[in-house]
Amino acid sequence: MSEDRLAIADRISQIYAEYIPLTRDEPLNSALRAMVASVTTPITGKPDKRRIVAICGNSGAGKTTAVLRHLQSMRAMASYVDEDRVTVQPLLFIEAPSPCTPKLLAIAGLKALGINPGLRVHENVAWEEFRRLLKVHKVMWVFIDEAQHAIETATIREATVIGNSLKGLTQMPDWPVRLILAGVPPLASFLARKQLYNRRTVVPFEPVNISGDDDLIGTVLATVAEKHAGLAIGIDLDDPESRFRERLSHACDAEFGSIIQMIRGAVELAILGGRDFLAVQDFIDIYSAFSGCKPSRNVFTSANWVELEPAVALLRDDDRAWEAARLKSKGSNGTKFGVRPQ
Image 1 (cartoon, rainbow, N blue to C red):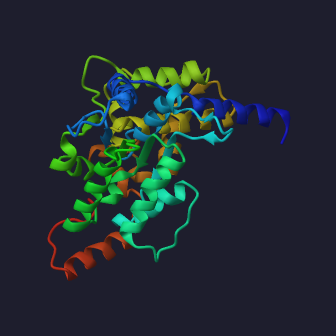
Image 2: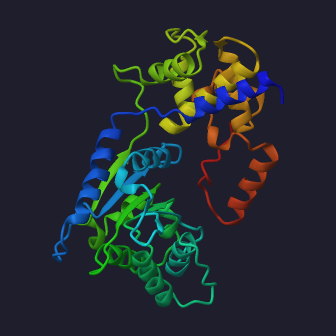
Image 3: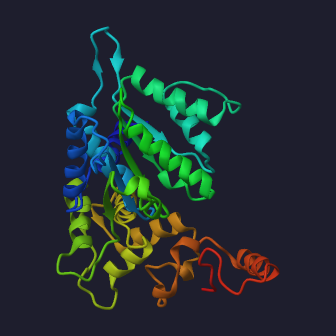
């Protein structure tokens, strides 16, 4: 790879490494700091809403990126060397498996600690060992990403066990830990359960609202393109006919994290193309690459873009015919996964 290519690669890498905060970062940071402070609070048997912090929002909202950014900035979460000269990682990251059961969730926790107990281990044994090893490894905070996997296909019994197990982690008399949960629906409904309600603080990540006075998309576009990438913006954001802001929001299901990723993808195309400005064509091309859509169904060019569903843009006529036949054979008169003719 030539020096120029290396320089371009480094430039693009730096653009993707930047973090763009929103007003929602303030309550998230406050909730996480309160959770850290709660470690010194003695166990009294009374519910404590600082023991579980939950971040709920749709896919593409930017939950994981935001949580990791804030956790990495907190000194209490950083690794350290204890009195026995052992490196301690006080924060444990777990991605909930899918499909998931109480046992599989406990096994995922053990694997995150470097232990593979095998699938034959009994559920209660797995949880007992997980709790024990959290203390042995001096883990004080557990971040469970994609937490909805733990309960989206759970039976009533499994959901109850998982709820009690999570609550139990925060109430261990000799080593209570704090939990950070991030996920999409049905995580929010799960957190409404009585056993968790009084022990959690919820930070919702809402979809982007582009109808307000603050031009969020314009601001983010300027931040990524101009500030981070050093590109001019060759797009007329005030053109009422093109409705670029609305098209970009629709293409990303109004989710902030997805909007940033699409802007960065368009910026990358401009840089690789050797240009010093960002054009609408970059968004046409990056949406096509992201979605796999037909040219006639590109959100940035189609006259009926409002009716298009980006999530299923990849589907072709044969896919839709197969889905329609499958639904008909099951006697369904609804649509599956939002698949409708486009």
